Length: 345
Length: 184
Image (tube, rainbow over all chains, first blue to last red; front, side, top):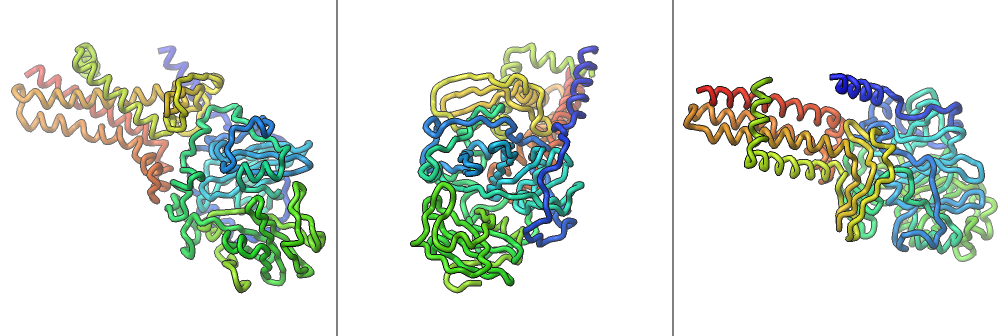
């Protein structure tokens, strides 16, 4: 009887403990630089439980890294790469699929690397003096993060808090690259790689949703999504990968085929000119605001570890862009411009 | 309650019924652990056991889902081992095994009671058995990628306690019936 009481007491204490450590300061916030197509109340109504509870998908708080030659990755394996403050790091998709957030540091600057497997999106955020965690909630199938300072909730793609004390404020983004290990290592030979010694026990050789090499399961373009969306757009199969950018002029999605074929895509959104340049090495885009509408020629450009170098690049302002599954992009940005090649929208 | 304990004791003390209960328990536990993701593919052959995270023994990752503390590499399979998840799976498996074998015994005793009573004894175990399966049903739907699986995800916290409760009620009902059969 005493044992039962002790067990009940222990379980009571365990379940009543806060799931995360509360820190002192909020993450970096600013007035959002990105469009918010739905009202915050609509986003809050659209939030769904993803199954696991708060921190049920645990973020990595003390990441360890290996040199590139110690990585057990094949060239085709998907990674999320970042080059910041002179450091290049790669985060294998097969590790992030189990954690979704890595709270890391680059030369003293606190950065969160985030990945949502259900929408195929990878984004980096400055996190100030706190950490980001996985809330266990989803909106448009997209990871809803929370910050451990204020408990505000931030859908990853939106990068704007929809609930909590910081509702309506935005996170400051950093460009991260959704590419392959072979491509990343060729661009950044000195890169480090996130180790499987995460502090948690997971089967890092197995992706519960499917596979990118070869493409299968949830990641197939024509496979069905699991959760409802705020806006449905069937112009492409749900999981088709597009390159998206959003800025003061609105949101734009470019098909991978159009970006690969055209090399440089110039688009006007509202009053603003944007230029997206295809990086064949990493097979991704670099997005820029092009206020002077400068003409950029792909043949004149060089893609280096530090970024793009070439005539006209210095007059451009970098805009964050990232790959996303079409259904999720269209759900967050129902009025998105779409570029499929040929005439500009 | 006394009837329930007597039936459980009776089922577990006979080698034949105890083996049947044990087999059902183990099969269900393995199925549960597979559907909840503790056992999955990804192994590269060979056998290995590692226990690097005992400190996470009581840490939860979801409603009645606990953090693994170790890894078993079993050929092509990998088992991220949580003693608590395994204990929960075995407990529900035991209840299902007891329900199934008790239901079978009631059904196999027609000469002591009417056909109607025997049939209802077996039927009485069905809701409980279905409840045991319900633990895994939403997970199976998610695993299969069916679109309405997401709507069921929020039910997950209630499924395991609900199933255990129904299984206990089913077993208690069966125990009463078996006591009546024995008395007649």
